[in-house]
Image (tube, rainbow, N blue to C red):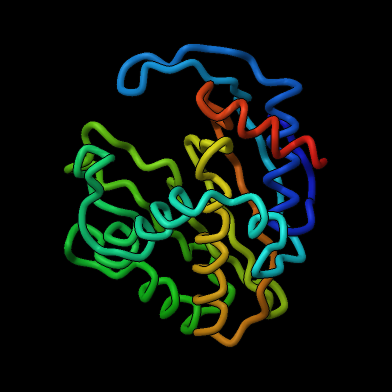
Amino acid sequence: MNDLGSIDTIGKAWITILKKIKSDGKSIFYNGDCNRLVKEIVGISFTISNIIMPDPIIEKYMIKEEYEWMENNFTKLGTVKELYNENSYASRLYNYMNEKNQINWVIERLKKQKNTCSATITTFEPLIDEKYIPCVSMIDFYIQENVLNMYVYCRSLDFGCKAYVNLVMLYKILNQVADEINAEIGDMNLIVKSAHIYDKDVEKVNEILKDF
């Protein structure tokens, strides 16, 4: 596991991981659904602290179309055409298996027992997931001295394209839950099994990193 420690702001975390993949990543070919060459690091952990929004780095370097695509994934119920018509993150979080609003559930759980160690939700829908398995896999919340921290496991994140938006949307969920339970916003702690950049995004990433 590559532990990158604590990094200030989402934008700086994104840039740090891009640099890490560029310098230490191994080139492999993802066969199956995508059939593309990637540069990948297996096993990255990091903490994002002192989060500010809007993030100046993301505001400067984000691609409008990819940002809006991922934002819709996290905010609009329904299926996602580009993901084999599997359910969006919004559906998985706010209407899990057409039965459960997991965000409301975790808010109520934390209200009833602030020190709970099991304020944990998942995006997996194993009874119906087939071609697409969500990248952001498990989200856990834990309160210490009225500070709400988030712990996230991701099976895979594409840092050359949409991962920075994943991080922004996770922060918005953290902010939502903290606001509902009257807690301070703490850190985001992530473990990413596969942190990668697709070959199609290498030129774009190189242009971004010229400034850093």
